[in-house]
Image 1 (tube, one colour):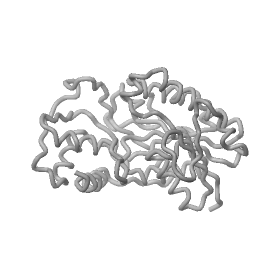
Image 2: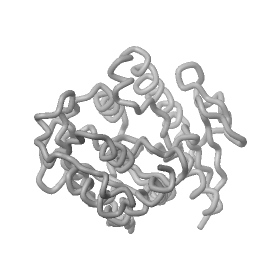
Image 3: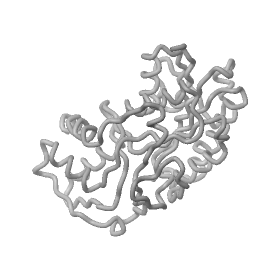
Length: 292
């Protein structure tokens, strides 16, 4: 394998950190940037005030740029439309434009949330039409629409599960926490995709190495929220304390997205595999039990 230069915009986040580690292990040269969580070897980069070419002056056609940086708390994004638009749309488009102008290969990290307004029995594949409900998802779709798919790759994923202390924004962690509280409710018709962060990182690296273009879904298996809850109860040492009421999603306040998870044809073409969702859930529960 020929060594490549992998430029990761947003390398301090959960996914960006995993891609950075995978790329270094594979022998690539890595340039990582950060906005709010600095650490050694990362370059400070504010996508709202700087150009990518300012941070990487020799950016060129042999480079691979992975655009991971974003404000991802959907509640915060909804409450701060102006600030989030500046980062998630304007900043992202500026980074993408700078990379493509220099001939670099671009990979843009998107989300399964772009399909929240639709319904699909077997999951949404790469040909499905986005129907965003949340402002966060709409911002992602707007960036997607600006990208030339003959030159760039849009990668969508679902709920990504990490393994370090503090990686607690995923669906497993959120459901686990809810089950420990009285009055927990789980929707049988809320379906989402559970993905091991290391599998996702391997997929993103493969996409970059091969300069894949178009749309690629990188996600593990889909699971209903109630099934996820049952797996957590069965795996946790706190399972006897965990109770929930099975409900329809429409009965829950402030939740509109049924979702049906992601399906992927391109991942198979790229030779990628993903851990089964139950094994990911059980491994994460073991981590959470130790922290509890």
